[in-house]
Image (cartoon, rainbow, N blue to C red; front, side):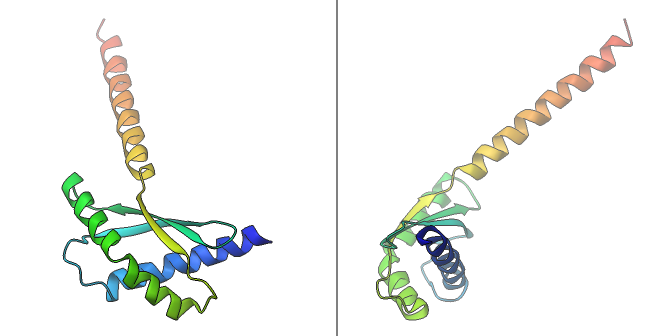
Length: 125
């Protein structure tokens, strides 16, 4: 039952942080950030917030710095909105799964292009 509650709390934290990114945070370092997932420990004391950023590595570093510096504000707002006895500590981590998926997609397209070239050459022999 605790894991189900931690999933529900994680989903709610994800919604609230996404709303804060659109309406509440004024940090110019934070670019086009998307919250991809939130994992909450069973005791509800730690929430790992995974995010992605549109842009290059510099934009990712700046957005990560902006998010980390705004943790006290985000926790305070979550405390007001979630009405929990204890607001979880937040830990922002860059979500590498999107980059990994893009790399796999690129490799598959290369293989598909090579196969198309090979099938085109076999007819000319």
